Image (cartoon, rainbow, N blue to C red):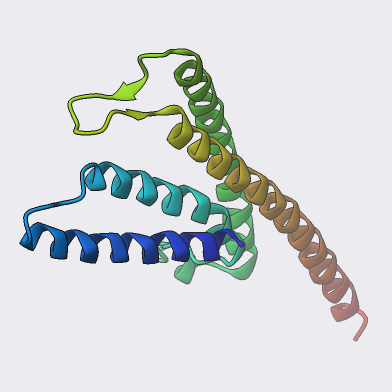
Length: 165
């Protein structure tokens, strides 16, 4: 659902930019379009994090993982998910505190632009996106742990059966 929302936001931005190009040619550009575009990109990026993790589409550097055993790959994946979840948890908490501050602070707006815009809606979307990403990482840690446990049980069972032949 969030991936579709991201696609919809990008489509709306493309339409708005095309409209702005046409309106600029007749001398009446849309005011505040740049701010709206930046906010939309924040929505698309942060709401897409959990989906990207769920579908395992993150960019990875495989220099190390292509040269190690399957067991080591599974352990590295498990550890990396634990580290990711810890870092994202800390970031989520920090952004949450900042979003709450922006909500209650009346001057938390982007100034110096044509249309002053409140910051708390965007910061709230970042909190939601990071929190969903954190939940997905916790699911990944749980799945990695189960995968490691099952894999080790199979290896132990095959080792035990290997000695009987």
